[in-house]
Image (cartoon, rainbow, N blue to C red; front, side, top):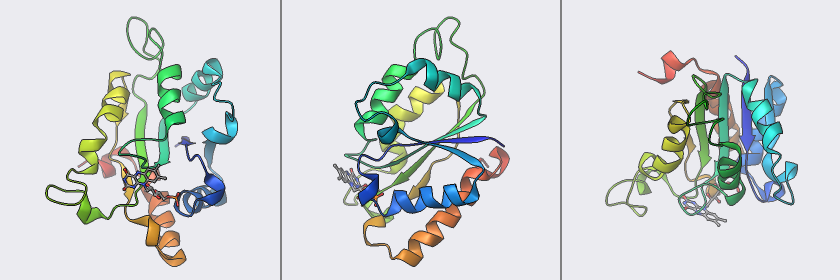
Length: 179
Ligand SMILES: Cc1cc2nc3c(=O)[nH]c(=O)nc-3n(C[C@H](O)[C@H](O)[C@H](O)COP(=O)(O)O)c2cc1C
C-alpha cells in the first residue's frame, strides 16, 4: 500500500519522539514523508502541489505532537488551505473519496491522564473530534489513531519499541485496524 505521512513538528530538531518515528519511517524506505515545517518555513502552502500529492496515495497519515489538545498550527493551516470547497468537499469535491486517513500523535500526558476523572479529563478520541470530522466531511475513511502517550520521559529503548509498533500499525490493513 502506498502511504503518505504528513509530519508537523515546529521544532523537529529538538524532538525525541516524532524524530524517532520519522527516522524509523525513513529507514523502512517505502513511505513518502512530508515535513510540513521544513517544506513551508514561511507558511505559504502550495495548495495545488499538496492536492496533487494527496491524489497519489491511498492512505494518508498526519503525524504530530499534541499541542494544547490539538495539532500544531501549520497543520491546522494546511487543513484550512488544502481541503478546499469543490475539491475536498461540496459539489464536485470528491477527490478524497475513499482515501484512508489516520492520525499519529505523541503526547506529554500519560494514557491514564486521558480519561474521565484523569488529569486531562477526556479521552484522545474526544479531543480529536474536530480533526476527525474534518476528514470524514472530506469523504475520507477514518482509521483508528496511533497514539504514543507520555513520551516525554520515554527512554531511547522505549522510543525504539514505539517506532516499531508505529510501523506495524500504519501498514496494517483496514480490516485489521477496524474490528
Ligand atoms: C506548546 C505545547 C503544547 C502542548 N500541549 C500538550 C497537550 O495538550 N497534551 C499533552 O499531552 N502534551 C502536550 N504537550 C507535550 C507534547 O505533546 C510532547 O512534548 C510531545 O508530544 C513530545 O514529542 P517530541 O519529542 O517529538 O517533541 C505540549 C507541548 C508544547 C510545547
